[in-house]
Image (tube, rainbow, N blue to C red; front, side):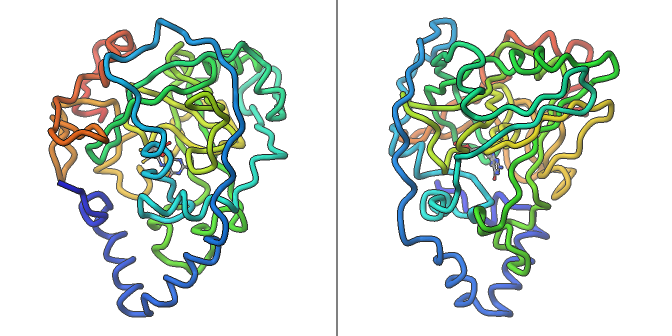
Length: 313
Ligand code: MTE
């Protein structure tokens, strides 16, 4: 069964988009979404990394073609095919990431420095989207902790905020006036983790996949991957990593707080208000399979000792 957009998107946003399409005209929207279609995004260059045997999956990786054509990247539109259709407008070079906020040593890291800051590892992770599908992806990167340690978080720092690039020229759905085209999210897309979650070795600063640099539609040139949480916690095309004392506001939580919590750990026992999270469909497979607590990453359980994960969803 294929989930429809109306199934996954907060109703208010969906209705706004629908009202826009019906009321103002689907043709205008169609035209605006296709202006960037002329060329496909460039094929990413090769990227070498040593496989890290500590992070592997029993199942084979999802086909590269599926992982790069079935995407969520609302900056390019809300349909799964929008990112690959529109991502040619994203320019992953030059690019830098600022690490600031509650740190002793703020950093501005050029993407070429990020590629060299620690040895690149290939890690095969499961990715579970909150919508109920999953993939297995061989990512390339290293633990985010390498970057955080360099910046030296102060004793006040309790959280980490990730900020995606805001540039409507590169991300067409950020253009003002296109109400609903980008799912009604408040740009830039932001996400966040508790500092101990961000420091956990599993949290990957990611620069590539499948032996290549990150394709534009997967969040070039640098993103985060947090495999025990729903996919929306893994912000793409980030330009800022900010250490804070307060829990950062996150894009989906701002859009629908009762549906998308700050923690968003994969949890088969806590349903989304509108659908069950007990099972998932692995892309490329027909039958649904059981969803595992923390997406199978039991090593993070101690981060949540004593917490009611129904309350902190
Ligand atoms: N990051 C940004 N900036 N914008 C987005 O719309 N979508 C999220 C996440 N990161 C998203 C994002 C969601 S819902 C998922 S499931 C994953 O990216 C999908 O990553 P993939 O397309 O590489 O599989």
